[in-house]
Image (tube, rainbow, N blue to C red; front, side, top):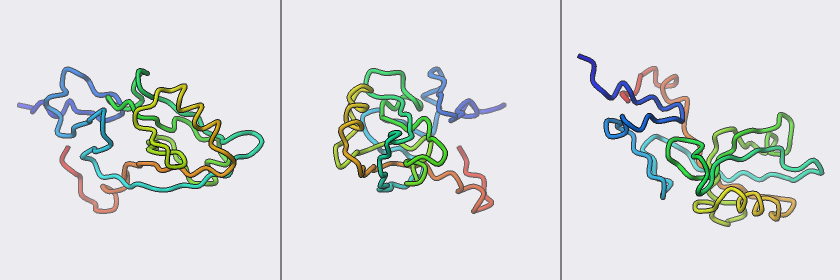
Length: 141
């Protein structure tokens, strides 16, 4: 009676056996996801303590979200430079100072951030989360 797309729970972990039933497709090589998202440029001023973020993912690492091998913000220190700049947990980092972060591995990403200077421009992809509450309409997933 139930249709199988009920198994598509997008909490960042997609059960592989139900992948073909899922209406939302994740393409590991591209940033084109079919959920609604915004792309932001966020400027962060490095402090002595660092940037105040942790990153996860990267090519060849365990994907942070679904099958996406991109670099994601996994932690933001409250009151730290990244928090002040507006970075959020789960943001996907597309570029750092216009250096593409799509196909880099984790240690490379860390190096890029380390060498990025004192004012860093992050280009991030952020999923729109408030759609349902704003429209008072449940999107069929």
